[in-house]
Image (cartoon, rainbow, N blue to C red; front, side):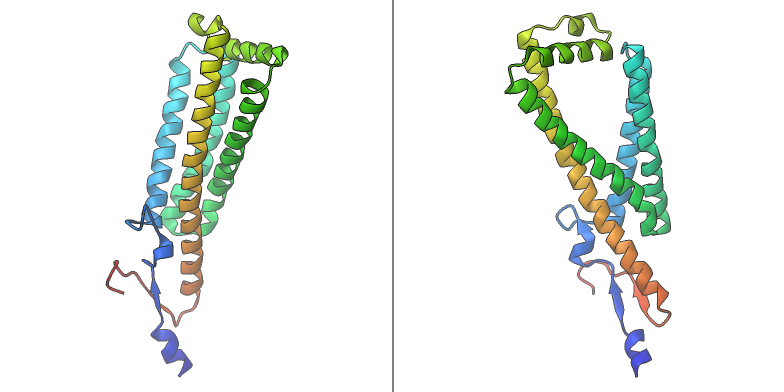
Length: 200
């Protein structure tokens, strides 16, 4: 009797908790799209710094950081293809770090630069800009341009934190989906099927 009940058990892949983008896309497809987009952005970032006039020291640092992000993205795409939740862990760690980094940068910029009046902090920021840019227009930065640049950086990090947070939530849902799917497949008596929305 117990085996017959297990045989009738259905694993509905299209439960609301396995959907993203307001319920229009399955998390597996969403995670795959995120991986592809993130990989393209990382490659474009690397190529951009290779051909940009950025100072050598800043170029090397950014290239190293950009290259390191590619590995977790590749493991994400492999995990989606294999439907293995463990392959998604490196990417979740990467996005968690990205979110914390963006939040810390927002707090740092607002507290130290936009609200603070420490001239030494402005001096260090100006040096940072000079080290990471070979553009003459950015090399000579005044007070107004500095505040504009700092405000733009703050908005950039806010947008990046929101984007990374959304990506993290989608991949996290995909992780839970693959994990539950694997647990269901481990029981030979359980019938695992995929049902389109509205048919289950």
